[in-house]
Length: 316
Image 1 (spheres, rainbow, N blue to C red):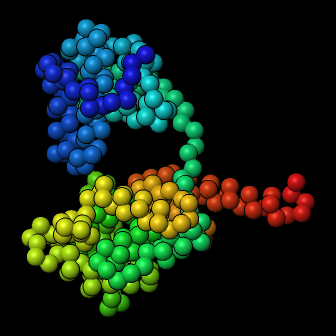
Image 2 (image 1 turned 180 degrees about the horizontal axis):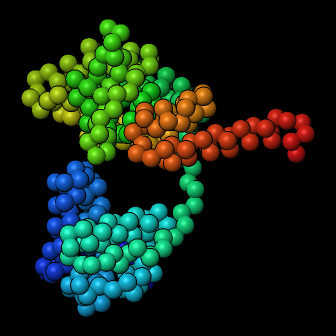
Image 3 (image 1 turned 90 degrees about the vertical axis):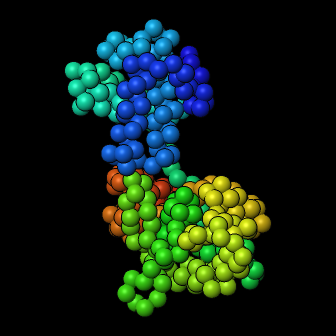
């Protein structure tokens, strides 16, 4: 079986008919479908793995690919079911593109079966853990003000880390109450959504804007319009935001580790537990499908079941 864990090593070095159409497909994703750079990069890696396999099979033209060839490629894929499914999805999109562009007459991937992906429940903190984490970020220096605003905003809005570091100062907006009480988030596919800020997040963001950001932006021309800045005044990168989360979790003394999505998962889970409609949560988080949001209803049901079995005298 082929080891396909490193997508960066699978860029074809020789131009073939397959690679030429693959580049056309990637341009189509960028220019016509408006896919993000990260999404296109993932497609490029998956296509590279596919082209490597086709090259080993002696196939350089898309017209020579058969359904059996596609099936053999699927059978040789390694990785988690989720990773394999993503790779298959990428190649399905590529073959559908070839049909739509009249390059080939039929979609060779329509009968390919994907492995079953087991439910993977999001990891969410308890409400008391979130409170303890946020309260542990104290101080009035610019870095502390920034970190508190970042964590409060991530938990209050459920924004992705990449969305948070992409915010501009002007993306903090007034929903009509005379205060900066919401953010304009640009999500996947450049789709925008307005997400309210709670009172704690609003206060933290205002403190950062008034007393923290001007200090870090002073004397530099590289800050631009970015809402969150690094220690040298430039826009805070996604990697540095992740380091902020990790470092603050370690200093909180709670013995917890944060992934880039932990506060997003916690926000969604706590909204569902609090009675929020799943469609509202879908809109707040920017999920394209409500099916993704419904994962959190299962988290809540599992939590209720655990409490019931622990607390009810006749549950066991």
